[in-house]
Length: 231
Image (tube, rainbow, N blue to C red; front, side):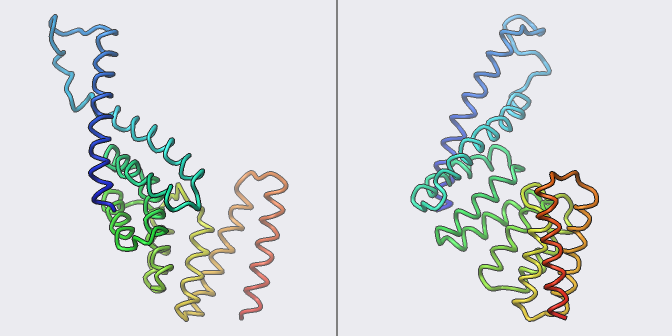
């Protein structure tokens, strides 16, 4: 699936890059070049032309694809059609973490387990500081019932730094669930304590609307009751 998607993606990329290059050249010409008449200016190279254009094309392509992803959610046949475009995004901009994240989810839901792991790992190789892709990989381990591997990766996701695609509470939830499933009750209890502390920090430091604040307080109280009952 990924190999076939890669071939389609390559064709999409070529077309997009050609369109981007011609647009860039037209923009340059309309603004006037300061170099010798009839030639390219010395500082203007094809690579510099493609840099920003590639990232912009990746952004536009992902937004359109992600909108379809939400519209097609639950329809595996329709979501499979989105894979070539997500792959194209990752070649246009290898640091577009969201495309790796969504593509991994679709691949696994389609039953392409090994391909989902490979795609996720490729994303991590290109974006080693991504907490989101670590959490995505942890979720794959959890769904494969590899609970200790999942717990380790959820912990790495929390330590990786800022999470762009996921909330820290979601990752803590996965960590606690993994440790419980692995039979690590004491570690799960400590992770639950960390989860409660994280939510308290959110409550104390972030400006929340009254409804969200009330829901958060209720969630903290429910977790503390669960924590006391499990001791």
